[in-house]
Image (cartoon, rainbow, N blue to C red; front, side, top):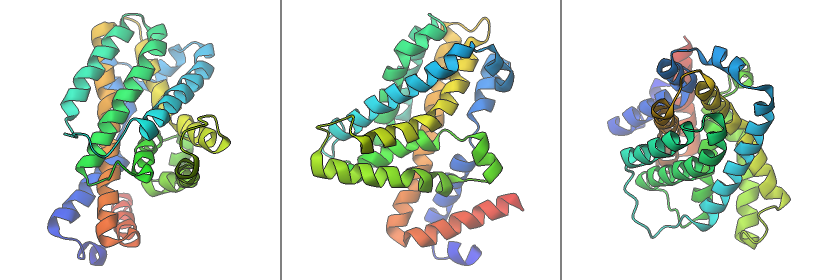
Length: 270
């Protein structure tokens, strides 16, 4: 790994290390637990059983709307500033409004917060040199929602960033080809539906954790606003790590960066 790292400039080597820390050390559950004062594993038991199926539906709806926005609403000619704090403030406002109604408020708040997260992700992508005029870059923004939802199966299989990216990559590639050929004339096309399902199945993990935190007794609008800021921060961290790696891959090649990343993972495990 050290030999591979030597091929990177000092700045890029540091950027790679920070990206690895963001992507492999992020713990949304721990952050949420710190706010509500209850372990998320305990809070999950407070969720009504009917909500688990509902959360899956919410995740699919949010991802579907984000996909439509990514394809038709993002572009390369806008002004992108990567103002993370701006989106956190907006996220806090939507969280406060949703939190005032408890768990049912999540139904109203999620589509808005998902779109805000996508816009923030796109800003970060642009700041790392992505050309948002291309469909490939726009769908790379969608990958972030999948990267933000690690599962217990991932932990058991020791699936890191590149493992998750590989799993979702085939669906992204197929969707890219479909959109380039036909545009978004059929949002329910099977190839797009598969991408939505694949991303939503992973987004459901952090979404369940957020819902569990909101289910803790005495969580009000103010705390819900804070939970939304943490939720936004989590996906901003994922986006920053993801697009830094993509930038480095464009400069040094995918194999070089993947080898260096694997070396950092090995050092962490040692």
